[in-house]
Length: 323
Image (cartoon, rainbow, N blue to C red; front, side, top):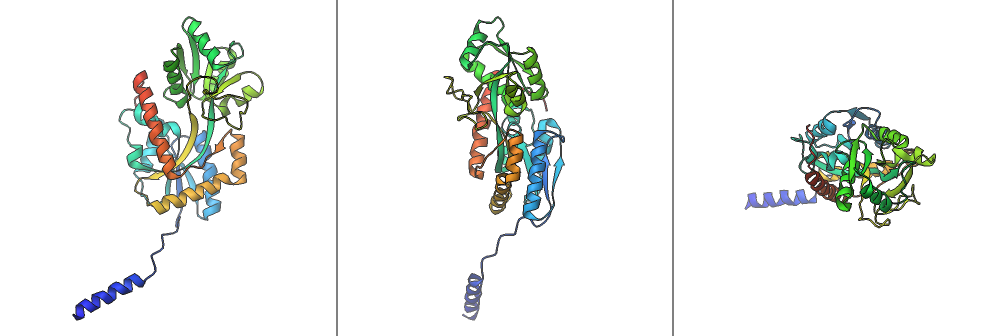
């Protein structure tokens, strides 16, 4: 009886104790892994986020560039990191939703190994035609492709990119002959567009914005469900009478899968605060980016849906790259 009363007393005392508070985030330096070399859009966004986080959370936030394997090396390193909130991945949409189906023997599985935290920003993708292409709408462009021997050529930032696969999807839906010309970056494709080497590009807005402003190229459609505020005069594919297609170039933050939910939510809140700051908004506008605010659950849904869509396009077009 005495032992029983002692156990009950101990249990009561335990219940009376205040709930243990979740550990503060972060309690030490944070590393943001950018899976590409310095100078590109992922690196630029990682550095912007690192500076904002460091000012907000009061501990060092540093960017570590881990390029290679089309982003796979850096992504895999985060997947293997300790799930303690001190290692964040900054990656682009294609790295997370296309590469797993495109690259053989990828050393990570996004859904199994990573937890989505926040999407920082996105850039609209557009179809832009060169100055000598007689098409003012997507319908006219596809009609021109059908009556042109050999069809039309389009440029993208590279084989297996979002923009490449969007072109494959448009071609399969429309039956128009479209020949993909891969480039090492959108700016190179834009140069050949102006010179007439290719008929059109599928590109993020940042790469073609100077050409549009100078009248050296024309945007005829946005690959989005709604018009971007940065291109209010350019219709979406659906508005142009074509099947809708939402292909935004977005950039997200992820952590190792086993990271506790309270840490994920804390990181999400901090990233959102940085993205909404006036300084970050100004930087986004200079890079033709728009801030996004999706919950971790909504981000997870986006990852599943886009991964499934691109996997089908890759299978249909029989595209495969070696890692």
